[in-house]
Image (cartoon, rainbow, N blue to C red):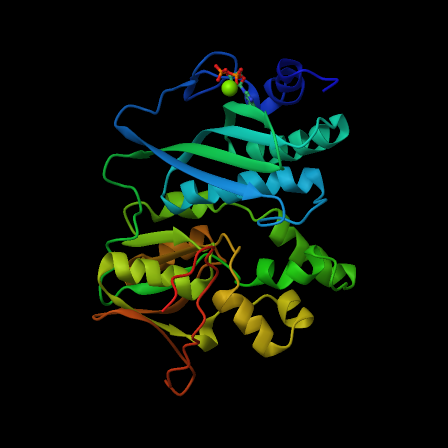
Amino acid sequence: MALGEFELIRRFFAAAACARPGSGVTLGIGDDCALLAPPAGEQLAVSTDTLVEGVHFPRNAPPARLGQRALAVAASDLAAMGAAPLGFTLALTLPEVNANWLQDFAQGLDTMAQSCGLRLVGGDTTRGPLSLTLTVFGSVPVGQALTRAGARPGDLVCVGGTLGDAAGALPLVLGERSANEAVAGPLLSHYWTPPPQFTLGLALRGKATAALDISDGLLADCGHIATASGVAMRIEQSRLPLSDTLRAFLPAAAALEAALSGGDDYRLAFTLPAEHLAAVVSLEPGVRVIGQVLAGEGVCLVDEQGLDVTPGQRGYQHFRERP
Ligand code: ADP
Ligand code: MG
């Protein structure tokens, strides 16, 4: 490596604007540990995500967009918990030191970090096949974290915005299809830079009874809330918010499938007593009610006549149990 490990860390990461110390970070990059200081009376929320080249993003992915996506995907878990952003660490495994690649990657990471208010506080740098592990830290007042357990029969089932855009973008990401800029632009930007819904997550504190971010597909992820809460969920197909660009790019059945099972949305899904709906929508106008929580178990999808149209396949799993 022409550039040594410490020089690489200093030049691309410790020197980034997002690595400056600030509130909630007592000590950042450079020592054996970082020191974080959540506000008094708050708990630390922690989540890790790994992205492996060829599995979670395509080979030769544009590095600036990859840097943004890696952090957005990780930060989304904090938003889903109702946590306010504090900091993150980056464990980076690289096949080689390519200064141009690192420059662009670090710039993308810094852009997303600054837009989320997350400080880079440490990491690790190793050689091997390209992979990124980001651990994010947030803070939430004791007792106010939005867990998956807590949904109650009678609550509304809501989502934070349109569904299926990132999954719909996959053929564009993989270069299997092309589209004009008016269609490709918004779909690709939802895949590469899904904005973590921090404003919504904070607004849901003390209101939502359960929440998560949709990473594996709406039905699979709603299934996690149903199981953790010991309830059933009924989702109305006609209420699913699909963007105009997704509808323009895919036939209706494929757009619906992307919204139900595609994954990579990073929108929040949550259950909410109806009395809080107006307050939440006024803060996040993209919020849509898509169904109801019922007594029982499982998630079902119904059409406009109320007929059960639940598909068999529910989201992506790396290791699927075999019957
Ligand atoms: P140690 O050997 O004590 O684990 P390292 O030599 O791996 O420390 O790293 C030196 C410092 O640089 C530490 O503060 C570590 O958190 C930080 N660091 C290492 N790699 C990265 C990276 N990719 N991004 C940000 N900080 C990093
Ligand atoms: Mg180390």
